[in-house]
Each structure stands twice: as C-alpha cells, then as structure tokens.
Image 1: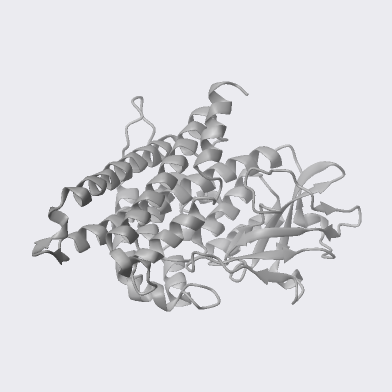
Image 2: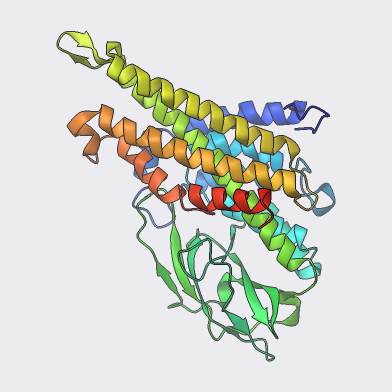
Length: 376
C-alpha cells in the first residue's frame, strides 16, 4: 500500500495477490467446524495450518529484505489479518509479527537478528507487555539487577503456550530496557494459563523471577521506549483489522439467518425492526474498514508519527464498537438459541468481549486522541 498525495488506498501487485490468497486459504483451512475443534486444545490452533502459513511466507511479510523478510511492511499484514479474523483463525501470528517489529524497530544486535531468523522460519514469539489487566497502565515494575537476574511477573501474555521467544520490557538501573528470553529458560512452574472468554485465544501469567540472562539478551538504547510505544499502536491496528474481519463474518451469519428463518409465515428479514439494525451493522463495518485501511495506507517502517497514531487510534475505537454491536445483534436476532453454546453467534460475542480491551478499549483510544488533539 503506497502513500500518495491524496492518501488514497492502493495495492501493489504483491499485496493484491496476498489479499486474495489469504482469503482463500482462511476460507479453506478455518471453517467454523475447524474453529470449534480447536477451542479446547492447549495451543488453540492446528500446527499443520501454522506450518503452511510459514511456508507461504506470512511471518516474513513485514520483515525487511536484508533480514531475510519480504519487505512488504506492516501494511501488508492488514488484509491478511482481516481475513484471519473473518475465518476466526486462531494462531500466534499477530503476537509473533509484533515481536518481530519490536526487534526490528529497537535496532538490536546479532542476538536479536538470530531470533528474527528463527521467527521467519516459523518460531512463535510474543511480547510480555502487561503487569496487570490495564492497557492504560504503562508503568514497568519488573526489574533486572546488575547480575542480570530478572525479578517480576508479566500478566496476560498472549500465546504463551506456543511462544518460544519472549520479549520483556524491564527496568535496569532506572532505565527501560528489553530482555529477550527463550522458552528453555523458563521453569516448569512459571506459567499460569488464563481461562479466557474468547476460546480461540490463549494467554497466561508468567513469573520470570530468578531467570538469569546474558548481556547479549538485553536491548538497551535510546530507541527502546519509542519502539515499544510504536509496536503497541501497531498492535491496536492489527487487532482492529481482526475485529473488522470478525464483524464481517458476524454480519454474514445474521444475513443468512434473516433470509432463512421464518416467523408468522414470513422471513424475519422482511421486518423493519431487524432490517434497520442490520443496515447499522453494515455502515459501522464500512466505517471500520475506512479507518483501518486509511491507517494501513499511511503507516510505514519509519517511526510512527502523529498522523499515523491518530489513524490507528480511530481504527481501533471504531472497530471495537462495530464488533461489540454486530456480535450483540447476532445473538439477539437468533432469539433464545443465540444464547446457547451451539449457536455460532456466541463465538463472535466472546471475540468482541476479549478483543475490545486488547491494546486498549474504545474509551482508551478516544482519550488518547483527545490528548493528541488538545496537546495534553
């Protein structure tokens, strides 16, 4: 997606091919039956599907060519993630590409370049952002001592059970640094999995206390704080894209039901009381995509500036409201059946409840926008 003078959205030939290929892949590899089969598994996804995604080069999309990537940029991920959201395809792709972005943007050394190569080859990774459930609390309390021993716990770490690489924001001598921890360095009893309302997702609390690392596993430079902030906003954009995809699938579910369910001898889709909110769902989805693809058009590999940050905040706020509304209407439209586990509508309302707080809810992003516009 190229930035033009009019900020219009355009797809390169490679990105258009990726959009179409990912749509077909997700449709075939993640039917609703496939999604349900993975709900109670440890990882939450099919390893064979993950390996196919690796072979297709999806993990290398936003990695520069000089680091063995495709060099398509973060914007190349957006249509792919939207298609994954539409198919409810649960894999550690978002967590892994964000971890890669943090390594790249922090401009780390040889050790992190080796980790990037492992990511390109299919090794899942994640960033341990949080120390509680509040995305608005950015204060880091976990520390690393002069002997390079970590003390502290990280909470709601995405895709913990799959990840082999963990990136931790820590405090060292009063300064923000990043620690790179590999799976084998964790003790057997360090991970405490969460039970999430969205069963397609995985998260856990991890106690990193007592882990001693090498100096090569620490990133400490003037780019760490800015890089971490940038990756959080990229994460908000990618989650927004996933939400838009799930909203589209939810709308499909609703329209199909309205065109097949009869009541009092008429299709229920003929009633205005259901037509009007369905149109609202469509217009909200269109608004979400408008914000998301505007952000995708102007984002680049450069440090994120004000206009990109504004676009991403707007995208996440709108997409959160859209999925919350569409999922709620899907349950309501299905009547009593909509509240049962057998109805697919509940998968989307669970996704809405979990994803709304990922990288900040709508109120968080509107508050951030107010701070930007009014220089607070």
